[in-house]
Image (tube, rainbow, N blue to C red; front, side):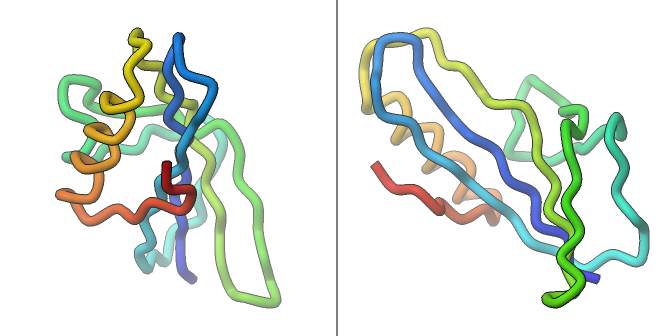
Length: 96
């Protein structure tokens, strides 16, 4: 099945937020509490899976990771975070 990892990126002083996602194939069923590692996470080496949704019609697992909170009031910092995720194969599903 396809696994779609989704994560929201927010900032303390910005009303806008963005979302990123990455899709890959896996024969393993993701579970709440499992740890996901990706090079896009930088110093934060992994995130715990918060929720998993199974879409049987699409043959997909949706994996929700905790939101990333940036301590900034500059929307460009959000855009920089998205660029960093994109450089590691992620897509932005809610552009700023």
